Amino acid sequence: MLVKVAINGEKHEAEVEPRLLLVHLIRETLRLTGTHIGCDTT
Image (cartoon, rainbow, N blue to C red; front, top):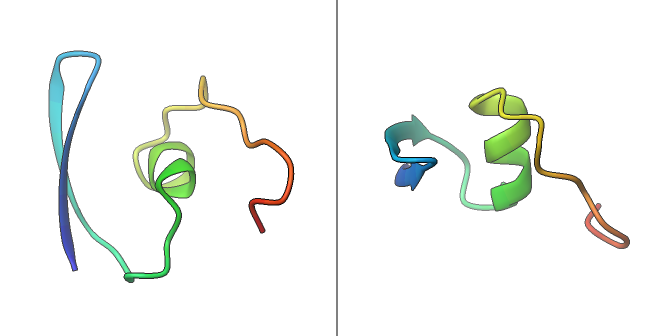
């Protein structure tokens, strides 16, 4: 699935699996580590 997001004024596109959480896209795929994972997001 193609996902398009705008974060901090920058546009990003990524091909991801539909089950991927947004927080994992931001932290792992886009390498934007300022976003923190809360409870029960496994």
